Length: 77
Image 1 (tube, rainbow, N blue to C red):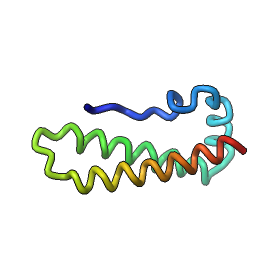
Image 2: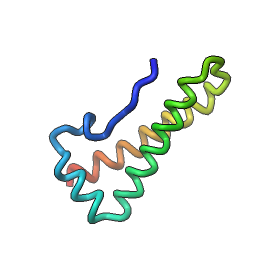
Image 3: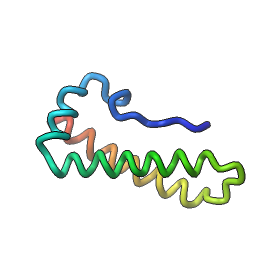
Image 4: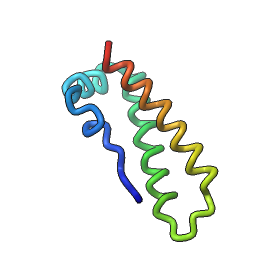
């Protein structure tokens, strides 16, 4: 199943903090940019009819999870 992982949906109670950090923190903005790029790459890999990229897909998902954890930690500060 192909599903977009929208950070606003994942952190609905932190949208205001999220947007403030995105605007004020270049490091946070870069994390979000990396997360969104990986999410798009995952969507593209998952959308392939003949998915021969399972290894690449799993690598991207792990990397996306690591970035999401960093974003979550920043939102908790």
